[in-house]
Image 1 (cartoon, rainbow, N blue to C red):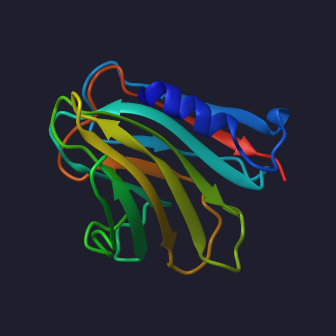
Image 2: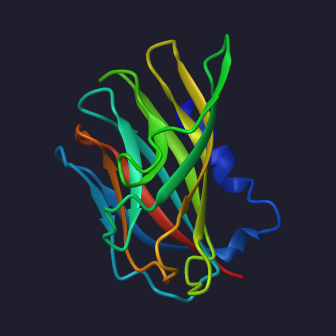
Length: 182
């Protein structure tokens, strides 16, 4: 189900032609890792997109950081539903020093989603991130819609780190970075 969701989300980029996405890098996890890093990101695109399917070593929150910034310069909003209720919140604030992407319930959870990083080369405005995804936890789980921002001194993004707060990404997790032409 999650892989179908990722395919639908990835192919539905409103206003973007199919050939306007270019693969920049892919990371396939072969053994547990504490983070995924995309570095030396070229500045030749309008926006970036990360698509992923992942599993964690424990239920945990997953965050995204830019240019090595670990300070409290990130803000988040999230709306999620679990089939019986919908909840909105402002998770973590700057507490985890990263844009909140998703939470998994347990080691059985399989998560997937798409993250858009808008205007990543701009040096005169803060960066905005939007996320659509969720996780399945053997019959339960969430669907998440989130947004966040990076409010450090405006700079072009040249590296992205995606990490669970305290767990690891398990084997077979996969992350792909795409550039979106303007």
